[in-house]
Length: 295
Image (cartoon, rainbow, N blue to C red):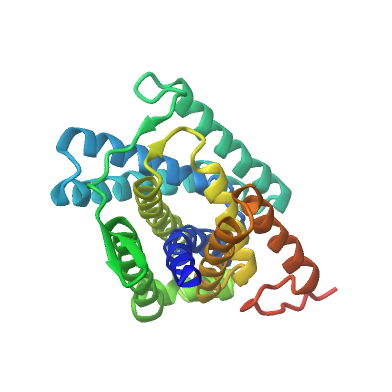
């Protein structure tokens, strides 16, 4: 019974990691860039929801408004960052883009710390009243149910967009061959911006759900979930959307089992140990595919 309880907790946490990891893997699949500012987009989304919920309240209408507003704001951030920071470096060496991504992350974190309406101190995140439901010896809260259901719906929505819409087909074409896609009349810059916006929307949703599950917001809150979502993306196979989902769930369950059966002090160590093991044994990840590089 304890194992099942920890499994439920792990699926809830893994759902959030999977949402964030999808943003990493989509951007990498399109422009071969690890967007290390992605975790801080989560922070922006959580703060947007914080202010909306503070003004409206944490009822159903407030939560809906918080999701919508945070997604719109984060989509704008994603498109703006891509347009101003990443697009001018698209033809530059890969290291330049990586350093820029880290710089954007630091700007967002420290910029939030100095803004008077945010500040460096943690704040309590308003959320619906927690109700625990008992099923035999298992306990699941309404927050966990919301996290799992909304995460699943967003993953299904993303799967539909990527596989069954015109924009999704264009995204797959650009990820396969940018030059050929451009020659076929696909607006490459627009598709890349759309990908950043879509990934940022998922990060915003992840931020609201993460802050609801762990009700506190601070300017550095996106750092650790962002890193762990990156681990999840690498575990599943960076560039693979199903891989990011699978990696998120595996990482969430592994972390929760570590907290439940070993010690919470080792949970972060386990997560990053998984990254090292995957890179040593199967660098392409569980569902990643090998790529041949011509010399």
